[in-house]
Figure (tube, rainbow, N blue to C red):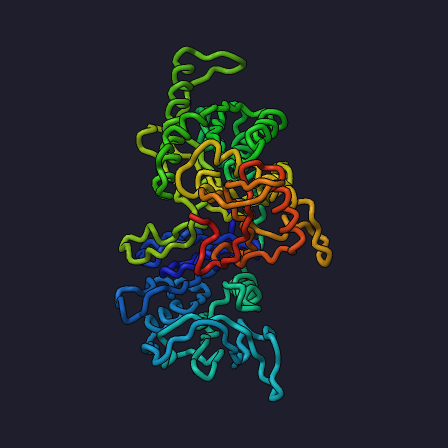
Length: 545
């Protein structure tokens, strides 16, 4: 059993980053809504494995909602507590301090002076002033301020605009900071969080994906028993790792359904089958459904409608395949083992990257954490839900995939949306658009993989977090030989990001962009203009639509 850290989410869009930093220290943690009851907190701690609590930031003001408070039981468990931004106000409000609305909001970079030499910050600094003061480069995001510390607390950090930027009660091991150590803009933030969970809380660093394989396998076997499982294999990292893990656990009790919807990347369908059938020897049903999907998408240009159609058709296909498996079971099946019929639907959904506070009973904390689709079980399927990756982050899923023996290039490839090229084609999805985009996209990826950045020695594919081509259904004038052409336009998009909450466009070399553009225009008849997207997130998103 793993020791654990409890993170209570007050609605900040970067709460997930706290969990990421804790997990990166190989410590298990869970994120739960802030409105859990005292009894719930005590029950969570009942197994004796809870080693500390972190209270997150929030989009709200303490004055906007006086019910937004930390459960009192948090401070009665005898474990260390760390409050971050709003979490600091929650500590002050609960223990007799004073919080006031600030005269000036503060967003962005700040330099904080560490005071009092508390265990949390001792020896952690970015530079020292001529007077010998230790200073930290941090990221602030707040409007309220703690103006009076609770009894027993001492000053831990300050700035000119925020005199109480950190406070600590060393006797009870309660700490609070106004800045956000979870974001990469706080340079020493990871060191601060590791100090808290590893040293102050004394938590074992035993959350390791290689070891997690055996834990996950045993859990799946206990949950499923001898039932049949059906899994929708998209070809993406999450579903691929889920398939490999479940197959490791229950072998041919698992049937994968791979839907070839005509919106995959070039040759992706064949690569999926080669891996899972050829190398893992899993049972995979390949459903050729491009005509079905493209037919239903005809005439539809609204992006959200396209997503709904594609997602709905996936459900329809799963439903049909599950029914077939049930019929096989009723007939007694064939082959080496009796087929009972599918009773479980497996998904590769990962939840920490979506909406942690969506389950809050009060529904107050509804901030979107990312743009990933939320999973769940379509009720009409009549199947139980198996989600073996639900508590993992994307980077942990990748580590798990490598531990399961999946190829590194497959596991660490760029994310690609479930709707595939359907949301990379602006406006209506047509087969000829998809065919053109598929080839242009493949050329872009091929050149990124083959171009080395000399300073790092890495390829530009490895140096970017996500890269793809987008089809623009407008015609541009071009010249081929002696004649004019009126053909379509594609936009190239490549971004660099550490957490997908923010993303900068990748400053690809002009020579690389020139080569990609030349190849696309010369090799893909029907495209005569290539553009490059230089929008950062925010305010843009990584996706186009």
